[in-house]
Structure formats: C-alpha cells, structure tokens
Amino acid sequence: MLNAAIPTNAVTEVPAAPSADAVAHFQHLLAVETDCWDVHQALKRSPNGFVLLDVRSPELYAAGHLPHAVNLPHRKIVESTLGKYKADTLFVVYCAGPHCNGADRAALRLAGLGRPVKKMIGGVTGWKDEGFELATG
Image 1: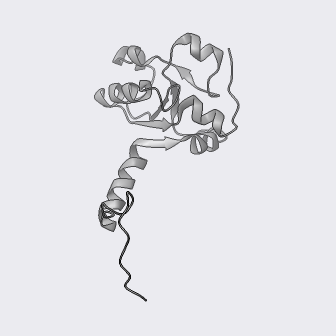
Image 2: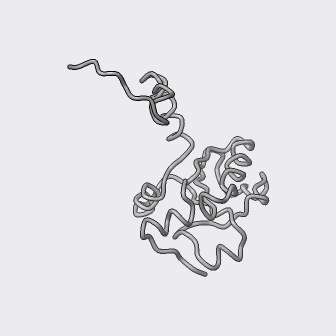
C-alpha cells in the first residue's frame, strides 16, 4: 500500500477521532436520539416500548401529527402532567423539525424530572421528508 500524503482540506485538516472515541460518541448519540425511520418502524409493533410526545402547540398538533403521538407542549412538561406514566416510561419527543428547539427543551425537562427520553431528530419535517403520513384531529 502506498503511503501517499493526505491532502489538506476542510474535511482532513482536523484528524478523525480515534476509533474508541468515535464508538463512545456515536453510542451516546444513539442513547439520546432516534430518527423518523426507526420511530415509524417501531410504531408498527405493539407494544413499541415508548410514548411518542408531540411537544408543539395544540393547534399545530391538530393540523397534523405523527400517528399515536400524544400532545404535550414542552412548557407543560412537569411532574403532574406525567402522573399517568410509570417512572421508567421512555418518552420520544419531537417538534416541527431541525429549525425548532422544542424537542430539545422537552427532552431537557423530561431528563430533569428523571424520565428516560430520546429526541426524534428531524421532527415533523423529517417525518414528511421520509414520505410518512401525518394524522389529523
């Protein structure tokens, strides 16, 4: 194998992390995030092992939300609004999309209350980009 010099550019100017660091990083990401495809596949199974929370306003929820999602705006996530869920219930939160930090705010509130949580990256925008349908009502 030739030992050619690696050209310097925006990709290569910062060396890649050692493999062990990359493993730890990506394991951590998958512990706190999921994606639209995985949520869609999981929703086909019953039970699926999580509660899907739409953390947008009730108006946006009514206009279109993920199937089986429960509407709980992120500002209303407090212990009393979670009372019907067991303490070890996994919540998957989403908002409008990558331009919105509502899911991050919701995840922070849930984690602060000691609740297991993952953020569905992409939100409604990502869901529609995958070609999945929204529910209304």
